Length: 397
Image (spheres, rainbow, N blue to C red):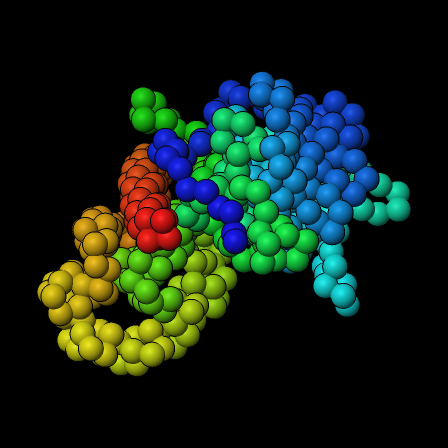
């Protein structure tokens, strides 16, 4: 029986990089120190040691993930990201699986604030080679996809899936080697990384100049938040292809910012380029086709719902979210306030420094609102799951 615990944990706020924080130090080729943790990179393994609690988590071999309190997991195809309490983000990259489906630990990227460092060739014959700490954490972050995201508790061996808050505990007898399978779990990283020239604006620092790089970073974080909200609400609706009215507005804002201030949108990428028309999985949906995610407008039986009628199809969102309709309506309400911003971006007008600062403020407010909604929805989903587990235990008693 799978042993994944669900217990109360405090609401986690997004961890932002401090403008003055110098968090990483390369002690030697095999040791990277963060403000609280030591990341040991040895041949074939990466170990994160918590200096405060003397606990650890280790990825090794093909690859396994073991903790100091006996939890066991495995991953083979997807990257694994662990977010630490001191604002450090660690992304472990496996090699491509061989003909037998076996992979090894290949790289690890360690990022904190503006600083980042990468160690490569971890399982090679020559062993790991760790680069220097540089001020390009966001660039490193962009080159290393999050994959499955785990969040470390006060002790680093207490790991939870970011996507649903479930704790990894013990092993899983249904999986190979009796270990939890981490591949395919996803999640949305909350730790914000920066490059050297990015500027940080806090709520008590109005009017600080901003930069195109900072706007691009905000756009990427907003895109991740929207992607996470869409995934969670699709799960709540029981419809993996559900489309939401607010979804396109936020995706288009993120794509337009990436186009104007970053490397540009990616055609066919629902976050960076607006979705693949006719592809419900990639954000397009097939209009009028409820099976393919489009729904028939005004027909709740065929998946479309009657907008604004919760009885006939799920509140103002046109998707039946049941007890989560309030969250959907809130997001819809927020999106309406950003239609003018999208129009401004679409106009192609050049922005003065004052307008850039105002735009940054608007985006930070959007980022904060989406983060709070993500946390609220995550807690709701966790509470519902806990209630279901309690009922199941009572039935077995």
